[in-house]
Length: 392
Image (cartoon, rainbow, N blue to C red):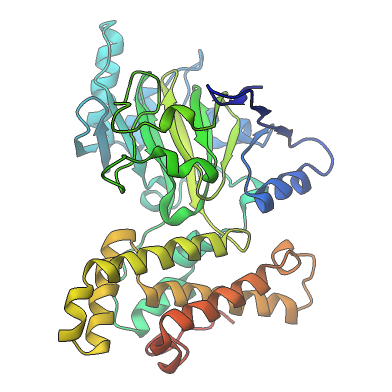
């Protein structure tokens, strides 16, 4: 196990590992999810995934030829870890440069293919199955259920392009992702199909130490010693963090609001989901509400010259561009899940953890806070313009 350490204190906590073959393992994982604490899962079924069996060479390396022949024609975003530039590459071109460097025994280009929507691009391929503790996924169900976002968009004359928050990451040894928290302060899980990763995670209590002393919204990118200017980020060195090596086939659970940076210690391929459920819905709402307040504050000088509905629409569009979610859509997603939870209760499916863990109460509370923040949404037929489509 690896420690949670602070260079200036004697803090020393271990990240837990849970063996999913053990009795009540899922129950133990749920405990960490409820407490918003990280945990690593072992024997979570990764070795049985199609991806684990087909994407690897006999020696455990990346099977470039198989991946290129199977997925090569699609494009995905690729970040140059040295310059920070992001471009679109086909999977084939990305892998070809990597493979050519390997064959010549030279370092590959420091490129990292991130946020490739593998499942969206190849819906019939089925490369993996979501680990059981993370199956209740309100975010991806909203996007992929035909009665979720697609139905809402059609009813409200909104654009809908099939999407999800399920990703594949491919990168050579040494590629990395700078410090960040996950989209909308959602949960995430990540599993290494090939290779190992080094994670550095900061609890939410340390977040205030990670920002520029003058430019308050500028987050430090790399917290490793010598990799940032201590004059600009004087508090980073005192922040408590957790360094942990995630081995091949292990699954990392990253809680809501935990900033983290991730380094590939080997050539690495991983599967990642951003997701949310009733355990973190209030934390996600806190983030959404904060972005709304920040948006209003940024353009409040325009408010007196607009009708209230016009100003709301302007803020809504800006927030959607900022975090990919408008107030109307956030409320629609919450109501969609309220209907689904109510249907579970009415069908007496009380074995479902999401109806027994307080999710319904937390969700109802969030919906009421949404209506307090955006009172016009309650008046507009349940807060959704033309209304939400019931999944039942």
